[in-house]
View: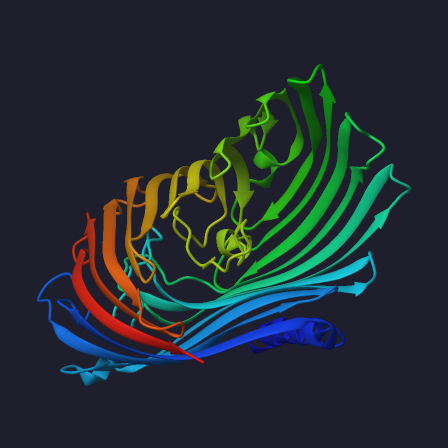
Length: 473
């Protein structure tokens, strides 16, 4: 793990060196103090103990924007002090960072991302609203990625991209009372090569893509994969275009039937753009040993709201859900990538994922809603698992200084891989924050978390009330 983290840090150092002077920097340190009451300090299914928790925190946010550099990062260091149960005292670390730098003008670039977060680790993948030290179902996730890539424009007819990616997902200080085994650390080497149609192809689009990866898992099943894919899009008119793709998959995974999912694949379909707001594509074909459907939907409800959905089938190894998640969202904001509604698994799986998300802003109101339905086939033993989840967030600016927020979520394992593994979890939180000055913010919130499990001892309920202040400098 030390070597892996060193590679990530070295990548970040390379991002900053040579380009830092040309960038504009915004550095905002802060300190914070909070007091939280919980009715389940130990996070237990029975015999719950209440306590007051004092948290001292400090950290910073930093942004660097230049002609060749874009960097954004946030770090928070906290220490929890329990009034009654001092054995639960401890530090929490949360770091999110993303950087892109242009090393050679218009050709050579480097992406670097890292996320270190404290998570509630559960078989359904949920993260509780309370990030604090606890004695059960907790882990620190270290997720890092270094990815240099080279691109070249072939006279407007094609664009070539060659990319290498090294990623890690490590789990430390794990304290799990779940029946399944603790999560395994992973590292992945991946090479991507692509040749994409250039600007001279105004209507017809095409692509030739290939990648190879080596997913190495501690105490788990390793997976090697190589894929080549050719695809094209031919417009019929302004509203309709035909889609087609074909290629070859080659898998070499431990403890699975590689021949069943390897081989040639193909698909065909249509892309519909009936208006400037709607973009829908659907393809049907054969891949991974069976029929597949691939679909994407984007609908701009208005200039302030959009709906995005999709349905995809893929084969992935351990840690793939975390390693492929990005630290920046589509709006360039830092987000926690170490949360996946389908849960975390150490096995090689074939997953069918349907997702739908709504984001919007109107006047004083902002909102996001996301839902997903995932069916996973565990390729080592042929068992299945179904997981459904829903998350939503709403905020309203009540006045120039006062904001009210409401968030909630729900997830359920409808069909578990193991007997007694079905779970239902939901959470909710509401609160207000008040801007005393430009650099001083106060917040009052209430939260509730509930997990019901078929397995004895995995149930969890918790109520929290928290008040906090934060001072920026």
